[in-house]
Image 1 (spheres, rainbow, N blue to C red):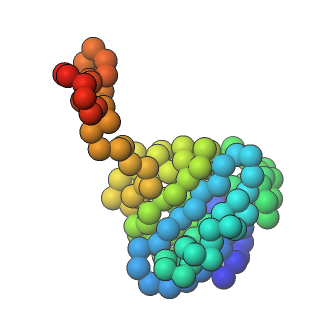
Image 2: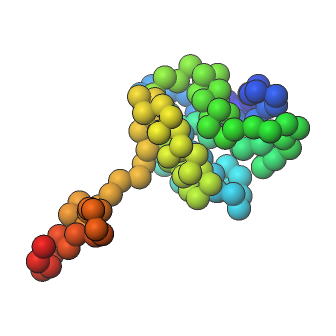
Length: 136
């Protein structure tokens, strides 16, 4: 179901595929709108509830008329669809929004970003050398 969602001092276009389970929220990059997810959307919708929206000034969302926060807008979109917890999947600008949301509301957001196992760790003084074949 696509709709306009009222957010603080504005509105954004959003789409919710419906369904049960922990939803995936797709956050687009700054070089496009939510249509960037169209090639993978059918496969995702077949297995998950998927929510996507256009950030203010992108795609079907009107241009901003006041200063706004992408994290606040995301939070208000989630509230509109009665989502308490979601997996956030973002690219570029959308990835930054997902990380900011996870830092501000860790109980509400699980991000799609993961560190590859045992490929290195940041330690005081720099990167450790824990990769295959490297001595520490």
